[in-house]
Image (cartoon, rainbow, N blue to C red; front, top):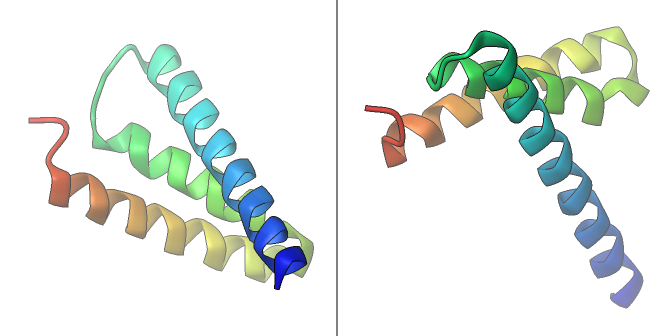
Length: 80
């Protein structure tokens, strides 16, 4: 149980790091603060986290994480 918990902890840390870095880079490049940044960061995160499974898995990860990120963004309504 301890090893699985540690692996999950590392996975979530990497996921948070990739998402935050991608969102900051996209926001700086676009010079806008909107939901598109969240979608792009979600796509980058999902794609990179599932890239080991091949291109199909990366595309599904990209779409899934981008959708999840936008839904959470809309739910909490950060950008009005």
